[in-house]
Image (cartoon, rainbow, N blue to C red):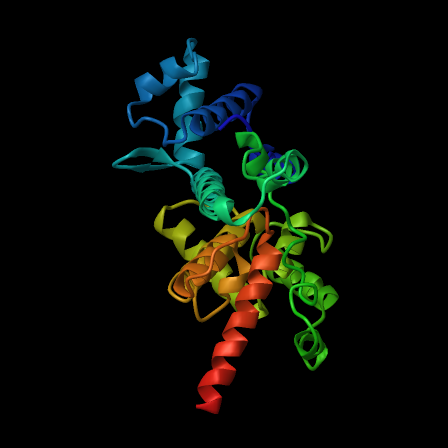
Length: 297
């Protein structure tokens, strides 16, 4: 990883008690973690050498910081936040690569069916993959405005959200109160609260995530207060597991991978430079036709 997000508020609260040397040590350890994309080695002497800790004070700082902010496992010294960010980064890399490969394969299969001229060939090449081939570091900044309730759903779905369910503003306040009560104080305008709302999390899910976070910290004998980033990571992990086995029946249309999978099931392929939105619309049309034919029979 050549880039990672640094939440200044969380970092300041978690490290305000550290000495200057300990703070610098913690920063170097985190950078080493992300750069290698794996846990810090279990051998403390090796760790001291890796981050160039030479004086007695610096070497002692390595020991103190590892024991306070990391958990020793068979793989080395691990940290939940670092593991989550690395996993998210790798997942986006894999999805982007698969999406790009799938789109190019579909284009190649459809080439004989489309009359290619110099003009439309340039247009197809330019529009075929504007995002899949962007630099690696572009996958590491989360886009939080793609899953806003109401924009995702059409017609009646948007109306259902407002009938008896909490509004986004109510969720902001509720989530902030729950996290502040059990861990670090957080404001309603914090980006991570916004991410939880965009994720579609409920109050019950946030409470459960906080409970899991507390139990995990207790098992690791880690007294660090629960923060919003940790709760958000747990919510995302739970949501991903819940949807893993229901890609077809529960929201296949929400991801490019799901759209490609459904298309293959129906023996349908993307046509040339056709966007995923257009391909998805054709799939829905085909499903409706098949259902009408089945009902008529």
